[in-house]
Length: 296
Image 1 (spheres, rainbow, N blue to C red):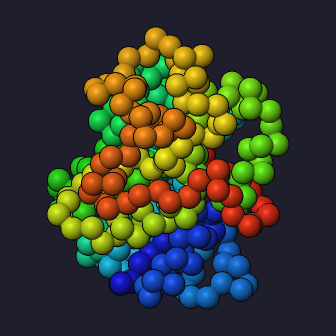
Image 2: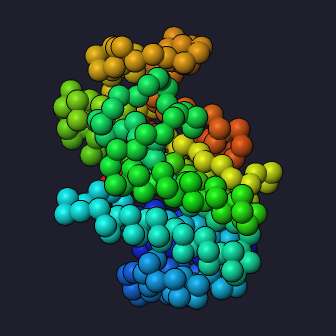
């Protein structure tokens, strides 16, 4: 399959491009940054806000993995965040329709739901894909609008769109970085994200599945590891930080019965529709020495 990857020079983008090529796909890359000297394949440098550059990149492609975005709020203002993330996504989708591209896998975020970041506590646990969205920041709003725009293009043009909602994405030996901070400090500092994380390899696996899954027109999927970032039991974390938060059926005991460290993110929909299962955990660290994280 001929696949365009936007945001190809980011952390997730580099890993995804390598996996796509290993799987036998023909990949064209698009990013504001120039292509690395050692990277193979065709690369188009450009800005997502430039519809002409995006059209050039989409021409002749069969699918698009759209990762290009500003990955968080900016202290100096929201103009760039909304312009790049929302207008940029509109340009990608419009170019896809014009070029006859059949499918776009767009990277959204857990932030699209608005329940992370400490602005308002979650209405229930575990958090799932049906969670009512209430974005609070420009970045959260931009990801919510990415999903709404994708759905609109699916309804109007028949373009297949899949939105992925990863939590904080880690790569490398993140067990080392997690254990470098006392558990109590990490628990407090990460409570606004409900101690969720996901390995970049699992994100890439979900993306490859989203590029080929059949039977959907538009859908959005949370992506999280099966466990939390904490050494403490999940029940203990909830009792300390979110004791008043309601639990959806069948309840906390059932949710934690098979895994006392289980995540508070419910990825059932990704498992059922994509056939995806996260396979990597910081509790079984890799041999890689570096560790990076990209906001979900």
